[in-house]
Image 1: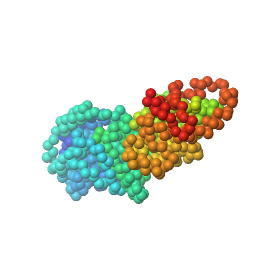
Image 2 (image 1 turned 30 degrees about the vertical axis):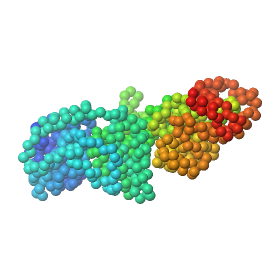
Image 3 (image 1 turned 135 degrees about the vertical axis):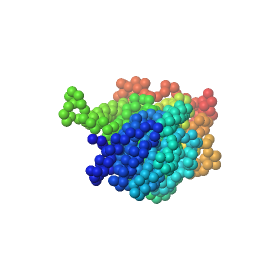
Image 4 (image 1 turned 90 degrees about the horizontal axis):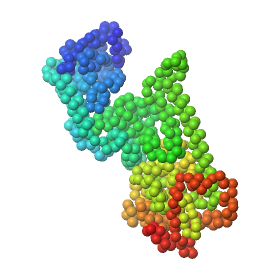
Length: 624
């Protein structure tokens, strides 16, 4: 028996038979629809009082008959047949409109989103007779891409964004009278597929992970919502660039409240789908954490890959992790994030396993996947505890040797690794990207009079750091727990530096590190006006203004470090040498400074005044 899709409840037996007879119709490739198919659809629509549509395959067979309500049609899942780049689905939708209305936004979104060959609307008279037909098909877009943010303050999102008709990813024809449609459907679709294929071959994508549209949704009732949203979207753009994503467009919507299902309003989300088709974007990245149900609903509505902010950060960490600690921590965070979302990945996960040993009730694939993921989580947590104990041993050994530890902390991309390189002559990777460095790096720095410190570069902080990632990297952050001094590095050129300071201090408080003495280091002084730098120092008398790329500017910072550590060095000098090596002979020097560079930066002796100032011989070391 033929299957009817959509709103089939309440259909009379006569209406059901009328609908089922539509499957008998054949449509040649040269025609959009035959008069017989149009008449059958009109009769069924008049009988049911609902929109009726047929998905016609290029072979001429009717693939599906769909029943809607009076104003819309809900298409069934048509899979990914022929949905390769440059090709359409080999299906065209021919359906009725009861009130003589033109093609709706839903019709056009379905055309673009599902990559249908064509969508045609048969407009009926009040008596149910077909009067005219209007159709639309996809066209390649070669228009200029938007560099600016598309801002929309409407709650529903039905407003346009000002783009012209020529830039739309589809073209409409009609309405024209039934029987006056003079188009060779087969030749039209073949020409369009050839044009799309040609464009896909010539289009270049600079980023390795394709193109994406960034989306930020905020509640406009909150004070300063637009300014905060723009800053957050700017940071998301930097995250996307670090992850290897080509940002095709950015969308910002201010709403009275966040839609609990789609986040954006449905109308605005439809606009984003059309925009993604224009720009060949395959991914939507949301600047918020999506629940599993939200991510599933948006993916189903758009047929695009959906990422949230946490996934983007996790992907960056997965790309950047180099040490065994970092890789284990990232994998643990990814598994914890994925566990509640396993059921959303694939329908096949809900089916029972088969084969020998798999018959009967047994476990579903979903249950097996969850069990294995939980086992892996337990294994990773045990491994991380072991590595944490090793780090604790190294820290205790350093404490017994009386070597002070200085930890560099701060917001991501503030210049922490660059500062470490400049102070110690190290070669830690330093890039103008968020999270360029993930693994904790320690380097030794020698001051005058054989005084030595270990300087440690930690993972950068970021607002709303994913909780699973924060938990996984907590042990790494706690590397700073035994620090004698913290260098809080701030990008003075960033307009959001005050928020970055608040974020860093909040995370230090959560890690119980807020009580450790710290020096504020305003970095990138070369990127701001000198007057602005002086004003900042007036507001923070204990701060230091440096440019991490210029060694000369770090002299004041070295002086301040020597002042803060003077008492610590004096206490270490009172510890007998034999106590420094007792109860820890199992650790070699290589283990003691695991992850540290073998080279030292030696700062030449200063005058008797010691910490009062760094001698001119420091300059000789810097210039060497």
